Length: 163
Image (tube, rainbow, N blue to C red; front, side, top):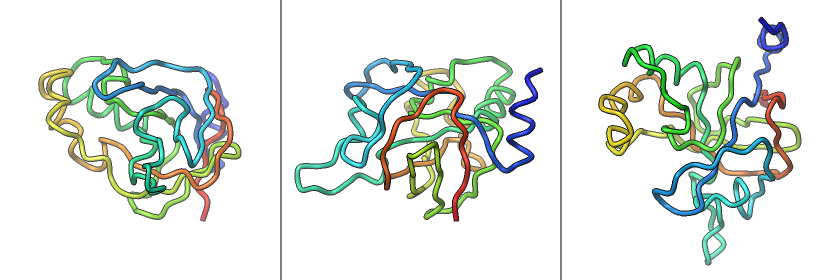
């Protein structure tokens, strides 16, 4: 077992283990090894992250899923599923995130502010029967964020909470 995730967890840090985007609604998720993330675009190329014509930024610019929450949903279902079925942009591991709006999550130069819990929709049951209820408890569906500082994110980057 790689000791790095354990060391990071002890230091209050996690690891970015997945990046994905989709170009349009209901499109398949495209898995990336790195991506730019900006206040104007969210994850580069993802249709959800773009600022609106009036300049307003959606409260769901970048979505984050904790690997541990996904594993809990899988355990409840008794099956292993690709994390991209959740349709989240970023997958992180080894870091407990506060279940609170306003939390700042740092990934390198990128700063994301949690706006709200990512409530799973019934579309999750289109992905796999029973997935929707398995994602409902304890913010398992993830976190919605806005980008407050842009930068570049790569798989393996350190993830931490800023106060």
